[in-house]
Image (cartoon, rainbow, N blue to C red; front, side, top):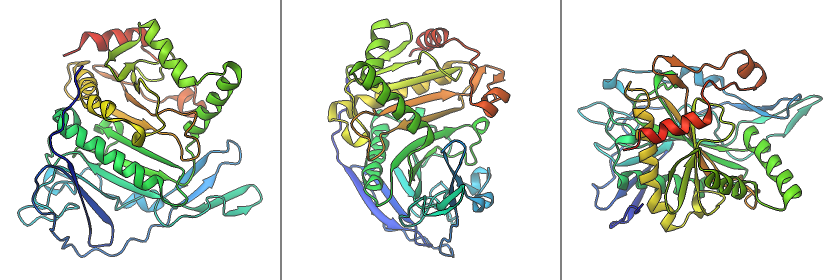
Length: 368
C-alpha cells in the first residue's frame, strides 16, 4: 500500500491563552498568521490534583476533584474547541485552524516535576499530581470525525502526536506519554468536537507496568522480544489479521477483551512515536483511516463509539517495549453495548461476547 506523499512541511506555531496555558498550532504548508489573541477574562490555573499509591495493588491513582466542574456536553454553538468566530470566544483564538494542541483547562495532572512518592505515612503514599494534560483538536470542523480526515491531515495529526511525545518525554519527572482519543457519548465523551488528549504521567501506568513484567519474563524464558514474537506469530497464523501494509500490520489479539478490538503494530519494532521512520509515518494514515472507516461500517448505525490508544514505552524502558495502537469499541451489536459488569469492574476479569476470529473476519468483510 503506498504511503502519503508530503509536499509541504509542517509549521509549528507556539502561542498562549489568557490564563497562561500553552497553545500550539500545527499547519501543513501556507497558513494564516497565528497571531490571534485570547481575549477571555480567565484567571490563572490553580489545579490541586494528587496521586496516591494503592497499598494493595501498587497502582497509582489520580485524585482530581476539580474536574467535576469541567464543561459537559455543551450545545454545538457553545463548543470550546471550535475556532473563535462571530464574536464567540473559545479555547482556540484563531478563526480557523488545521490541528491545534493546548493545555487542558481542567487537567488531571498539572504542575512542575515532583516525586509521586514524596509523602508517605505508614501504608499511605501520596504526592502532588504533577505532569501535563493536553487536548488535541484534529480539525476545526465540529461535525467531522477523524475518519473524515484526508490522509495528509491525518499525517499532520501524527506529526503533532510525535512532536508532543518528544517534548513531554523530555520534561523532568515524566515517565510516560499517552496519546489517545475517546469518541462517542457512549464512551463518556464530554465534548462532541473531534479531538483527543495527551497525558504526560509522573509514573508508569498500571497496564504498561504489567506488560513490561510480561516482556521481561518472555525475554528470560525465550531470549526473544515479546512484541516481535507476537507480531510474527499473528502474521504467520493469519486468521486474526485484519489489514496489512508494507510497514504496519493490524490484527485482533488472541485474547481480545473488547467485542471489536484491533492492535496496529509497525512491522519494525520501535519504542515510541519519535522512533518511527519516514516510510512508517507515510503509510500509517492510510491504514489507520481504513480501520476507522471499517469500524463505522460494522453495525450500520453510523459512527461507532471507540477508544484509540497509543501504547508507548516509558522513558526508562525503551529496549523491550513496543509502540502500538489499540483501537476498540464498546459496541457488541447494533443495539447492544459492552458494559463493564461485575467481573470486569470488580475483578478486572474480562468476558468477551465475540470471538476474536469472528471479529477479525467481520472487519475484513467491511473493507473499503
